[in-house]
Length: 135
Image (cartoon, rainbow, N blue to C red; front, side):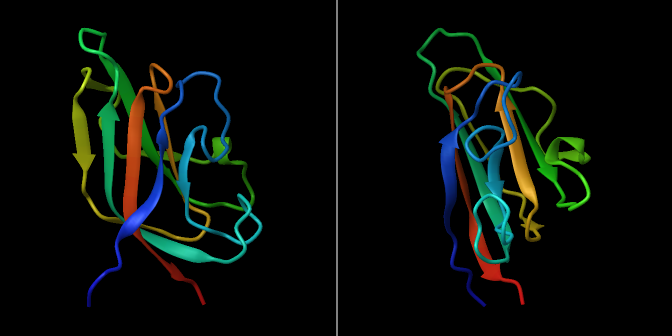
């Protein structure tokens, strides 16, 4: 069986302090769940790769990044749910350096990937994978 792998989301990591739990802030990707984050249907996702690139100019200080998985729980707000770390804590990327996390994992509808950085808007990310309807 072949997978229809595509880009699910792109963006830039935001500062680790003082950012909200909204798409484009700390929420890098949310598996669609009806009524959550403007989704209209329930879908699960298979994440196949996540790439990060430090776009800071040459000679700038390294930037640390963090990436977490959070399971959906209708009884708790997203910031109250347990986080599971995907990357090593405060992984440092020098200017121009990139990292690829290619461990495959599945998100059920409503599950999210959270991320942040020690400096905002300099770490580009691309999340690749596939989604499927949940019946």
